[in-house]
Length: 148
Image 1 (cartoon, rainbow, N blue to C red):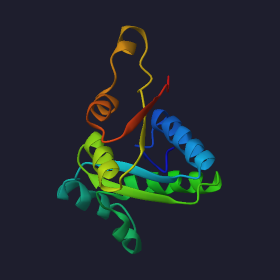
Image 2: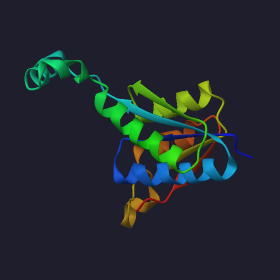
Image 3: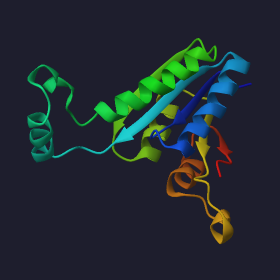
Image 4: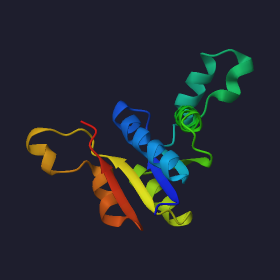
């Protein structure tokens, strides 16, 4: 069956539903769970502006990946609380779909779990860019979770 499952998250409610499904599957199957989040680089100007707005002892926390790391920590804690024993997180710079696919390839995953973006109406026949790209380029099976 599935021994390793990868799921992507950006912290949104839609992504949280996909993470929830991946966590439940990993717990049920005693599978390893790999949680991925992608980020875009933050400009040096923005980093300097944010650094000025926080206390000096917390300046080290302002950087391009901090939001992503917080999202990953939250998802990891939820997975551990649900009984998933092997949880790993990955923050990757760049495109979300590429990050998910790359981790699935690098870690020899058996399953990728993504949300369908909760589309309704005529759009329900078209997947969002991340699930669409993942479903077409994944190195393994893909579970698209109905999130809407």
